[in-house]
Length: 190
Image (cartoon, rainbow, N blue to C red; front, side, top):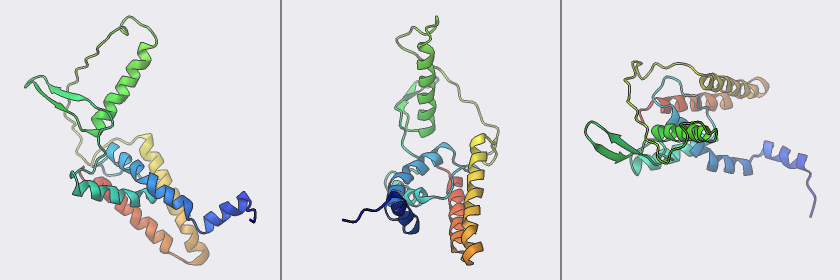
């Protein structure tokens, strides 16, 4: 059996990607779905066009046909209580689950420091929702949005290479169409 060097194997994958594209299709859809779940309904979603977007299209299609939801299911179980009406229900909201999961992690770190408020067996937190004065299309830019914009610009720069070298504009067209579709999908109310 002939021995193939690592360099030759990697070069062959760059020329004809077969193994890595399968892995990216399998893993990418969940990553893109979680990214959309964290910031949907905005003018700009920091999600770049990738293999995961194609896989996400199938996940979204199954979600719409199945339970009618595009968002990821909550990965953190919690109950929501309305103290005014005494209404209790399980939360299936992805964003609320992530918020409470992160708050629990912060409290766990504080409990490790042993201050006077850290010794409790049950913690009840009461939060009151505030109305967001921003319209759905208005938001404040964060470093995540800036990184997403930079990566998108890098993608377009790389897509220009085949146009400059071979006069082949198909890669640029696919990248532009994919980016427009990704941003359009992010504008959908979830």
